[in-house]
Length: 258
Ligand SMILES: Nc1ncnc2c1ncn2[C@@H]1O[C@H](COP(=O)(O)OP(=O)(O)O)[C@@H](O)[C@H]1O
Ligand SMILES: [Mg+2]
Image (tube, rainbow, N blue to C red; front, top):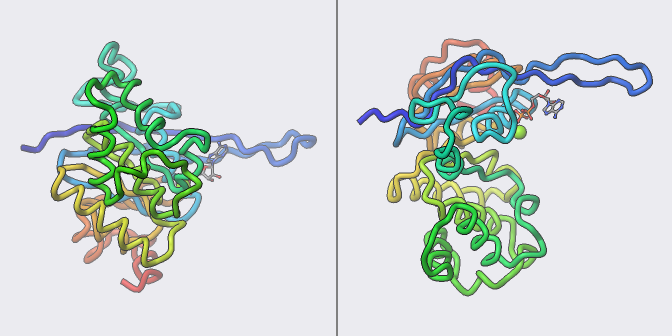
């Protein structure tokens, strides 16, 4: 039952931030310090922390968009750097939806072309239009929208489209990095409700990144709190909300009126 999909072991990542090109001085930013955690099937994880705390860095490391300086990521027990033929299977199973879907959707491609490309990359056979249409409907959009371009949609619709494109690959995990931060409050609720439905009805395990503990507690089972690249708290949502161990978490709770 307790099936671990992903395991992070002592992940560390530093950036060198240059203060001035001519001064040549630089400071080291620790974006991830010694992060260890597990993603278990069916248990969605929230990642909370203020801007700059290392949330997006963590998302990019988990999805192998960037490499950590040290530490390991295990996908079903195997280091992602030694998956061999199984690497594309890992990539397929860990999908990312970013904050601004406008930047991640190619403006020159219709929604259908973009989705069809994703199917092709992962060698998924079948009637592409039928498959894509099915996922459009799953996120509450009309099949006919497949022939439109990204600019023809609202922010909330684009977020649904990004979600559909991720779902198409039937991933074990969808990482959603601040998926509702740039949306109006009423639309935020619609997208969060959609994610909850996908979790409950379609068995998607989410890693939901947000600066807002309330957003995370709506969807997630477990939560980590990030602060300056460190994981300062890790536990069930219930435990972290009701009896946080860390001062910084308590501050976040007060700030969000919890
Ligand atoms: N490519 C980069 N080069 C230098 N510093 C970076 C880079 N990406 C992120 N950082 C820094 O790393 C820290 C964590 O950033 P990020 O992971 O984007 O945080 P969050 O998503 O929580 O806002 C911040 O101090 C940020 O300025
Ligand atoms: Mg971020």
